Image (tube, rainbow over all chains, first blue to last red; front, side):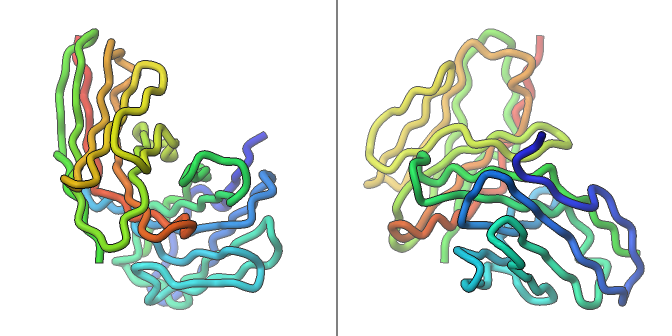
Amino acid sequence: DADVTQTPRNRITKTGKRIMLECSQTKGHDRMYWYRQDPGLGLRLIYYSFDVKDINKGEISDGYSVSRQAQAKFSLSLESAIPNQTALYFCATTTTKGLADNEQFFGPGTRLTVL
Amino acid sequence: GQSLEQPSEVTAVEGAIVQINCTYQTSGFYGLSWYQQHDGGAPTFLSYNALDGLEETGRFFSFLSRSDSYGYLLLQELQMKDSASYFCAVTSGAGSYQLTFGKGTKLSVIP
């Protein structure tokens, strides 16, 4: 079983719709991240959370919101989707305990298309 | 802010050695990581350098020079399966565990 899972894996939606992407992890990690990836632009950080009560904006948080429902779950919402939010979205986790520094574990990604 | 520069594409022959360079500009630099991503897949961690010098992970080496704000990933005995995108990423601030990624280098290994 995968340690970091994302649902849905693929989604097409219309402009203006609200959509939620979900991430779950069984690694017991405290830190979780949401990134988006666009061709030629690498991975850019949207939001990150160091624990259930700690949420932080990343480089490109506008148009997005997040919820850390439990240590294992971190959801990303697009309140009103727009076409330039079409991208590949990754969730990642890490821990401050016992790992090589900065080893983040990524989920399989969600490919979102906004029409 | 932070910025990273790495070549967009590199092509190398199976069995050869290839080096992917990364230069960065950042405040409060803490370390440089490398990630591999195959087409359609998730990024996976390869290596991390916090101190100057060379780290070895199997067929791969990663190097860091803090004074030059420069690092590289060196892949030897290239295999077709090494065809992938490679991203350098910097961490700024001790214990922050927040990464800023470069735009990635697409490595094509040819027979």
